[in-house]
Length: 251
Image 1 (cartoon, rainbow, N blue to C red):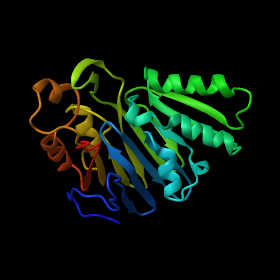
Image 2: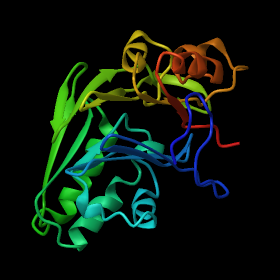
Image 3: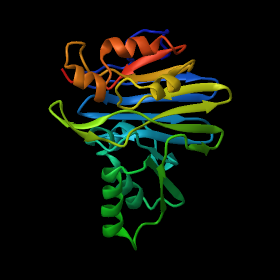
Image 4: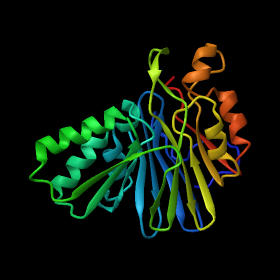
């Protein structure tokens, strides 16, 4: 289902399960699930390639639910290492191994992302000599570009902190991504507070997936370092030709 510009809605709502599909001229973007603190997973497909942006808990289930074979995936781009964005990684790797998947599976993540690295290390320690596919990892810096088939992916550093119940701890390595395919641009903010790079990611995008985690009535500290409020997300969305809110509050 293709929705009109600026409409805050998702196709296929069943209880807490939210999914949305957008497609244009040979590329499709499907939000398999996205709720703050629970999970976010976004599937990008063309005729020749497929990959995920983030893989929160339940990603493997969500792919199977859509009748999408995980073996089609070329890899995963992670925005950052918080559990609601990467807890499904081990399950995907385990499934590919169990299904005797061959070829190369790539994982891209922000440089310094300890959580993703730890999961990769744990999987390789357990199955180093019995994994039929080649696992390749890429630590990304701000401004790095990756080409997957005809898709060019630009990684931009965004502003997001580690926190517990809204209490700030320290900056987290975090990225947003801008995809280009045959003149079509798609932006994914990742988790971010307002910052210049996220504006650049979203500007003039054909589709922007924008996190909208916070109500407007939160502390200034949270607004500056954690997430976008609904108002900030809506303002950011006006820079794109079309946008959707993702990473919505649990309640």
